[in-house]
Length: 308
Image 1 (cartoon, rainbow, N blue to C red):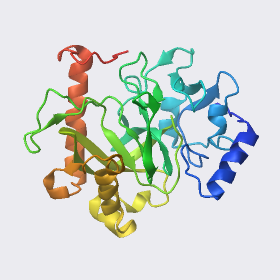
Image 2: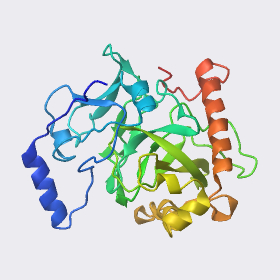
Image 3: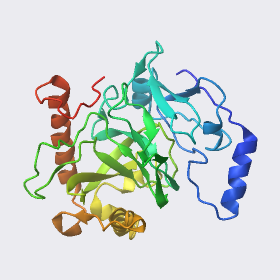
Image 4: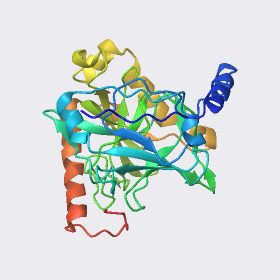
C-alpha cells in the first residue's frame, strides 16, 4: 500500500480555534481526525481552510480489501473553508476529477457499505455533496447568501451513501410523500470523529423515515466497522444496549434542529420508530435502483442534476 499524503495546516490558526473552543466557542468545523480513511488527502496549496480542522491528518490503514478499492483515489481541498468557494474534490490515480456520488461504489464488502462523510461529529458547518455541480464536490450549503450552519453541533458523523437517490417523482406508499432529490443520508454513531471527505466502511443498523418540508428524507443509522463496539452492534436492539438513549437523541436532534430558526419540528413516519436493519437495507436497495434509473436515463433528469 502506498503511504497516504499528509497535509500540515497552519498551526497558529489551529491554536486560535482550540483557544476559542476552550473558552466555550462552537466547533464549527472538524478539529481533528482520529480514525481510518480510505482515500488519500492532499492539497493544491497551503490553505487556512484546512488549518481550522486541526493540527494534522491522522491517516491509518483500514481493512485491506476496502483500502485497495480506494487506494487510487484522493480528495483535494480547494479554497478557504470559511468562504463560499471552498470545495473538496475527489481524484483518481491519473489526477482526473471524479464524483463521490457517482464513482465510489455503494457496497464495500459482504454486508457493508461505503459512507462518504460530509459533516464530522461535534461540528456545525452544513457541508454537502453538490449534486448540481460537475463532479459533485463537497461544499458548504448557502442560505440567503450566507454559509449555512446548524444552530448547534451535530453529535454524530453525517454524510451519504454513494449511488443512491431519493426520487422526488416517487411517492412512498407508507409515508405518502415523495423523495427529497438527494442521496440517502447516513448517521454514523461511532465514537471517533471522522474526516470530512473521508470514505468509510460501515454496517447498517436501522433507519428513520424523516419528513422534512413534506419530503421523505431517510436517515440510515450505521457504525464504522473499525469502531470498538462495531462487533457488538448489528441491529436496532443492539444500539439500545451498547448506546443507551442514542436513538432517541438522534430523533430529537433531527426533529428539532430547525426550530431555533422559527420553523416547525420535522415529522417522522412509522410512529417515530427507528426501523430495523432489514427495512433499512430495503430502503438502500430501492434508492440505489432510483439512482441507477436516473444515471442510465431510464428516468428523465428533470431536476437537472449533475450525472458526471
